[in-house]
Length: 304
Image (cartoon, rainbow, N blue to C red):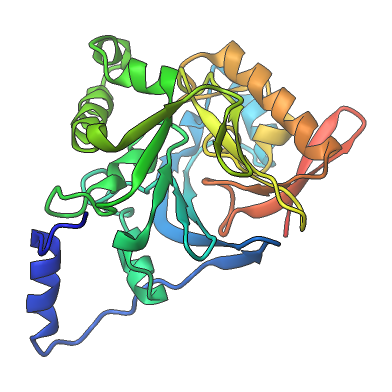
């Protein structure tokens, strides 16, 4: 059950009692109508990343050619799109954004919910693709209370086991130790509300957990089976609108197991193109909706 009045709610009430000039709130990025419900895409913000850090061990000239530039330098804005599936009596959030403690350009999801008139407390399920900060940390609000207090949190069993162990900290590259500490602290908050699943399982009715491990040990994408056209929630299985499709073997700088992630990408791209499955991706250009086409041996992302 919800707390009768937590710190976030108390503060919201106090602010609403004051007179102030409100800043414009984010709006819904897009809506995709399914036969059984409505799929929303919200903006949590953008990540500003150095282009040369996008792909690991790719020669500069090849990276530049893939990006269509003379040199792979500068900063790229990578959006963070968050999806909500509304079935009416069941509201399912896919990942939770980053919250307030990761990057200053992220953490806009609560404001987007407010602008859309969505009460986070009404969300019944949160399906987590993996435990990186921009996907997990937003389960907590600014006061370290659960933003979705009554939800069941679903995560791949192997993903949970890794980030809940001491091995996670040891596996982090220099400068990313807070990824492990941050995951563990969020796990401690949701531990009593977690439902673990295995790859290939039906997580919820008509929602299949697709094995896309490699980016992280238990990374999962979610396939929404729907008569109006199935849609895949990709998480970080596909992160760049050109390179993830044209060069699926190139290692994303954040892939923990590069060869395994490349195999997962190729398998996923084939399935998306062959079965004509729609795509909803976290880091592709907002709102992240599109589909995959294949010409010969080359895949291409086409935005809807």
